Length: 109
Length: 114
Image (cartoon, rainbow over all chains, first blue to last red):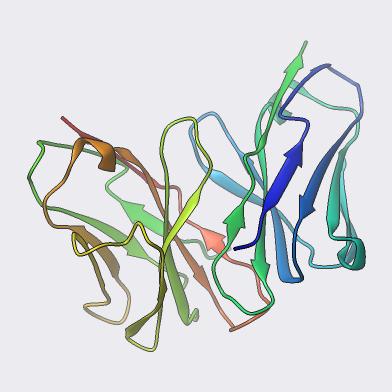
């Protein structure tokens, strides 16, 4: 099956800093989603972005499908941004989401 | 904004007992999913369901598991005889269209098997 690798596994920032999270995948996809898992365990949809660039407030994401990677940018980070960020993809031939291991982000005040 | 709901939020059960986890997908969605996340690990696919039948299942989804859409709104996951290793967060998700579309996740049910 498809492999999804996220980096870095852990990231510690000071409030106000910017960061870039990366997601590499091993095969063609027709769906890519970024999620934020909050301290209560809920998975919050951030972006549906199989290709191109999207922005939502301080967050933006870019997927370059031909090169099999996606980036999530967080600008002016806040303590409430802390949590685990997951990238998940669906292979072109499938319907299941395959998740990466996640990036654990800690934003300190 | 419509959302996927799940009940209960937390379930504690004894090993060997049957549990049923309930989900109400978004009303005009056609595709339904169950995923699970063991504490500290990544989210794993269990099963997908479309047109009243299983469309895909993972190797985790063995004979102990079953899914059902008993009426027009609920989608359930049954674990017949729970094991300690079934302790996890179980997420329901739904999607409106086939192929390319966002999967929307519910808040999860945390299952603890003692």
